[in-house]
Length: 297
Image (cartoon, rainbow, N blue to C red; front, side):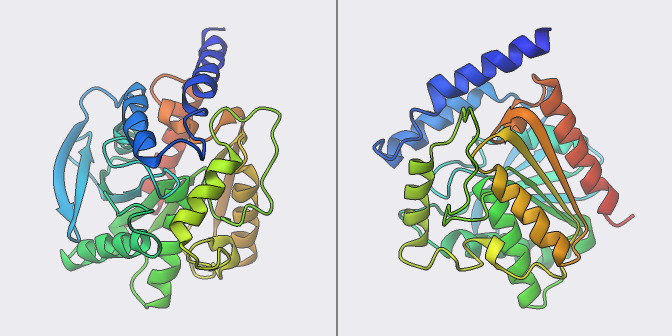
């Protein structure tokens, strides 16, 4: 009963306080400032450590929970390629570090409109290459991300494959945004977080005139063959549910080991409520298990 009431309260909070700000008429600068404050409600587990660092020439945050870590997660934060940072996602990366037993490295990749495509992808690649240059075994690296960062996770893996670079051990994506054309958005009865007009504007700002069907912008249109095992999680109350389902279908057709998990009555990147909402905590625990399972022993 308490969890049901918490779900209801969180849904209403997102709908009343977050969704109105994610509107195309609201300036991006204000959205960035507001979401920094809104993400304070996403609380990392007690004992998490956040260390400012650099990775591939980018400012980054290293998140750790246990002193004895098994591997590394390169985490690409969401925010429509126009908002968000390693700081806003500390709650989620803290819980992912705990669940996976890994260090989680979150680079502050460049954002649009100041830095449109391919800046975010170039930065993600630079971060991954930096890990390899440091001598990190790629089998000890996982890549994960949420929303736009989920799409960026898949695009990065595709680019690494095309460049014949060693691939990470696994991919994990939460509510991935993989079709910026928005031609097949889902229409839930309730969408507590996203507005299609806002994501359409974010897509325009990020693509900067490049066709939205470019597979490195919208990975759903790309060749996913040869990619590492993929875990996809999404809520049933989000316009990107179809993105998750279609990504799973395309990946399976390409023989990528793929797991799709849909959480009924939950919303876009509900995993940020891990530690508060039991089903969010369970989802991140499942993501951690997926990451651990594929790391080199």
